[in-house]
Image 1 (cartoon, rainbow, N blue to C red):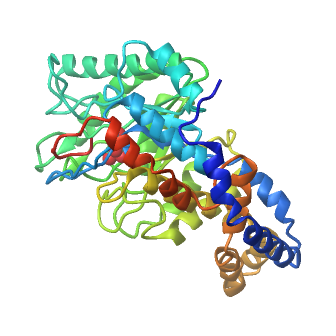
Image 2 (image 1 turned 180 degrees about the vertical axis):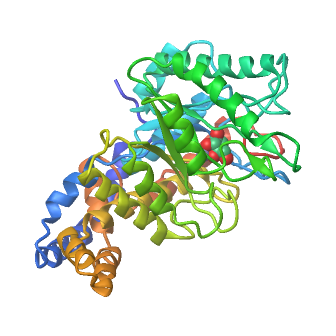
Length: 430
Ligand code: LRH
Ligand code: MN
């Protein structure tokens, strides 16, 4: 029996203020779209079945190497993080899964954790391993790498940790393992590029061999940080070659913040899909480096163009089409719940806009080299305000028309500040 953190009456009261205006806006948009042959209810149906997972580590305040500024009432363990993720899903109705990170979310009873999440209306997405930090009492340090480490015992330790994450994930009902390694160098000559990649491939193949039949291994590339001269899996090229080397259950995960500024990420998405290796996403936004800012907050047009490629990809499946959609952000200056509500809206909005692209007009213009009309086919869809469709989908599922207003009316954070112990000052991501 689900026991959700916010009262349904509060959401209903908040919605009552906006219901009439929403109906007007939805009907007006419906008439506008019908003029171009689009059935708004069909789009609503697609939006209603869309979802994106939230990162457990995003429920707390994030920080940089310089500092982290906790807020009163922020979660201090996985149980409180699940409660906050349930608030996000209760209001948005598009975030029914949590992507956990180990050992940050380790508990003694994962079957109980699975039930606890289910009671909050939540399931589990990809599990994330962590061989980029040393844990107390750990036998071998990851200071010189993990899956690509020169030291055999260190690589073995990293392999065993990833296999443990798979076993935990099986108890939670997950079917994906996300493997991001920060392995790399800060100095030219520090490591041999070929030998370190070969060590990575050898170790990763042992993790791959431990995957259950219905599981996937999602390789997450990243250009730099924590290494600042070279990174073993630094770009989509290294990632797809490694995934092809490992086997059909190995796919590539695209974290939007893991590329140099101005890289054409939507083209990378098209390439990975073309070769049947598009496994998933970590949605966020950035202006400079791996800033982990709120999705769509800096470059919403890029997020739209990524979803435009995803809608095209779904129409042309290659080895199926089942990318895992997940948020991966660091909330350094906002209430994490508000940031993930806003980000879920931005992500779902870009998916909805991509559904509104007149693909016949686009393809005809592309085939006839009518550049302007090809661009306009995308721009027309991008310029449509899809908010009424997103709000209708939420209300139909029991969510809020204005998610941030309803969240603030709930006084949830203030209540948690009374209940939860304060988080100490610190630095870093969690
Ligand atoms: C690395 C990364 C990875 C996670 C970590 C929290 O930058 O994107 O996905 O493990 O952030
Ligand atoms: Mn990531």
